[in-house]
Image (cartoon, rainbow, N blue to C red; front, side, top):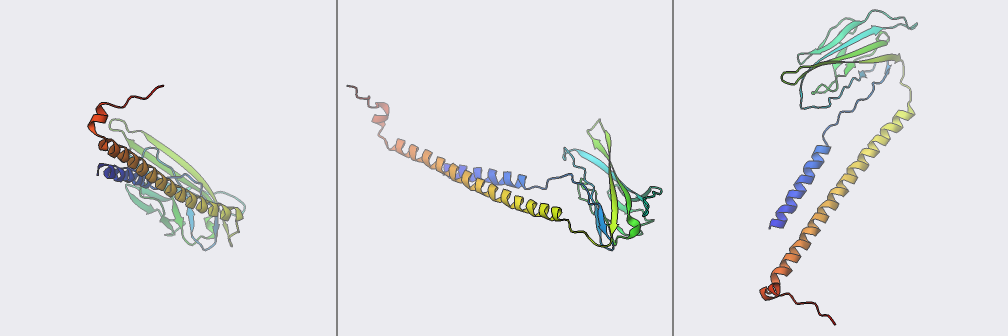
Length: 221
């Protein structure tokens, strides 16, 4: 009964380990820079936290500097902000065409442009200000990421991107199967070792007490 309890406990620990590995992992990736006229476009801005358990107050501001076909730049303006846990579109040029597309933990602070127009081409700036709470110490850090967006009438076929996406899914499936195989192997190995230990204990208990106290001396010629 004790052996069976140990097997169940070890299996539970393995399952908890798998659940821990399956938690979402923050990966800092660059944003796409080519939008299609009339479609939606996600401006990706990700800044991963090294210690998620630390309390942090995050403020996000998105700026936009438009350009024309001759790449002439204009004044930088604030177009979107996330402050005091409230996402807000500032208005102006986009007129309600911006939507929050970030994560709840504010490691992903991306936004979405709806119904992309020609005038959306230009430079986008993502500013992330974080104030950490270490009781008596509250440092502040600012991270800036820039995106240069171009607008095209039709989407171009990016073979490399499609191939990379397929390979990513294949790799995820392979890693999942490998993890399951490792779990089954560890479970069988633990069960086998416990069975051997139980058999050895059973054989020892079956030996008469006289033989345990007076083991037979080896015969020598």
